[in-house]
Length: 310
Ligand SMILES: [Fe+2]
Ligand SMILES: [Fe+2]
Image (cartoon, rainbow, N blue to C red):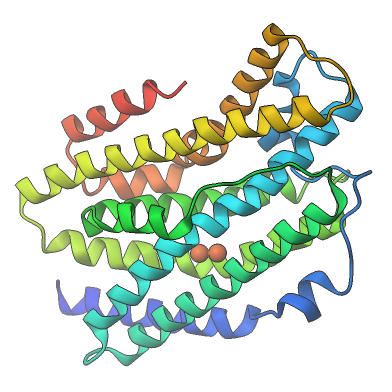
């Protein structure tokens, strides 16, 4: 790393600390403000829930799907933030006796992800208060974190950058412009977005720093680790699409034949793959950072793996 790069990195850590201080919010005072969810309102916007793909459903049933998907959306963020925070704490040790601004930026990042996990647990409880009983989200965040953290740091950081960039894209492109959404649901992701901007900058700084120390063969194995992590995400999405379909069918208030249930499950899975795999993979900045680190043949390996997830 050159002296100029080090100075530039230093000022980026400083800017992340400043932004983190400027946007900092409180769960109760700023986000929830004594409000409740309302089952008459839509939660996840059509651009993310892919409402049009649920071709057999009425408008009311599509709204129920947006509520189920919105609940799962909050739970998936709570899930991934467990391993993200564990990795950030680990990375902060690399700077502990060096750049103190880097340490502060990463400690704030960690503190924010702990708060976000609490916010998403609150959302799960509050949505549970207004929707019918029987929804399940059975994935254990610690089990997932243990499996993810057993992979190379490079792969975990690439996945983290991907997640933290698509989080912002979802808010700007789909959640913010949708005038029909629950104001409370919208605010949860507005405040979340505000703190995620710094996270993606820090992910990139740490990823590039870590990448620079890797041998070619190590990076090549890390590309396989990343593909394995995306496949594991896909496995979680398949299970949740099946679970959310079973819940919808049990609670939608009419009989759903097996064939229609299969179509609904396929639409849930398509929406989840769009939310957590393809919207990030197509994010222009994610593509730019990743292609700066890997070879064309590694990039083709990743694309081939993603193509199987449709
Ligand atoms: Fe977060
Ligand atoms: Fe984050």
